[in-house]
Image (cartoon, rainbow, N blue to C red; front, side, top):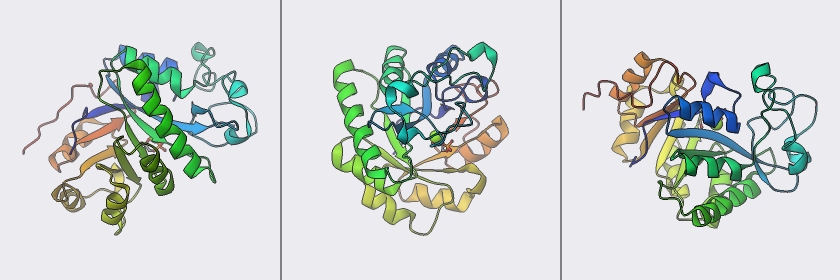
Amino acid sequence: MWSYPRVLAHRGAGVLAPENTLEAMQVGWEHGYRAVEFDVMLSKDGFPVLMHDPFFGRTVAGAGEVCKTLAQDLMKMDAGSWFSPAFAHARVPSYEAVFRFCCEHSIWMNVEIKPAPGHEQETGRVVAEITQRLMQVTRSKAAAPLLSSFSFDALMSAKLAAPGLARAFLMDTITNDWRSCLQQLDAIALHTNQKYLSPILAKKVKEARYGLFCYTVNSPERAREIFNWGVDGFCTDRIDLIPFNFRGDKLF
Ligand code: G3P
Ligand code: MG
C-alpha cells in the first residue's frame, strides 16, 4: 500500500527556501530530508519545469503565463528573489535537472503533475513519459517516483502513457466518489488535505487498502495525531520542526 518514506519536504524545503527550485532541494537535503514533493507544469513548448502557479506574479515577477512562455525563457527567470535576496540566483528548474539532483542525492520524489488549465492530458502524458525515460537513463536504484495530481484527466493520461508508474489521486476534500476515482486510475494512494481528514474517513481509505497521504502537516503534534489515524505519510513546510525520521507514536 505505502512502501515510501513517511515524511516529505513540501515543494523542496517548505518555508526554508524558495519553493520548487534546485536550491530548495539542496536545503531539504541539508536538513536530512531524503524525500520530496514538488510541482511540475509544462512550458509553451511542452517542456516540464517546476512551477506551482500557472500565472507569474508570486514566485516569479511580472505578468504572464507558464503555458504561454518558452522553456528557455522560463528557465532564465528569477525564482528566488521573492523569498529572499540570498536566493536571487535561483532559477526556474527543468524537471529533468531536479530529477537528476534527486537521483544523485538519493532523494525519493513525489512528482505532483500540476497542469495549467486546459493542458491536463498533455501534462500527464509528458510527465509520465519523461519520468519513465529519466528512470532508464539515470539507472536510478531508488524507488520510482510516485506521480500525483488533482487532475483526474492528467493522471489518466499518465496511466495510459506509463502504466507501470505508481499514481496517487489528490483530493482536497474526500468526496463520495473517491473509490471510483482511485479504481479508474488504478492508483495506489489517496492524497488529501489534512485539514479536512477525519478518523472515520482515514479508516475507510485504509480498510480499502489504499495508501493515505496528507498535505501539509506543520507540527509534530498534528503529525502524531494523523499517524494514529492510520495515515501513511505527509509532506511538511516545517522541515525545521519535523525531522525526516519522525515516526510519532503509532499505536497500531
Ligand atoms: O502534493 C501535495 C500538495 O503539494 C498539494 O497542494 O497546492 O501545495 O501543490 P499544493
Ligand atoms: Mg504540490
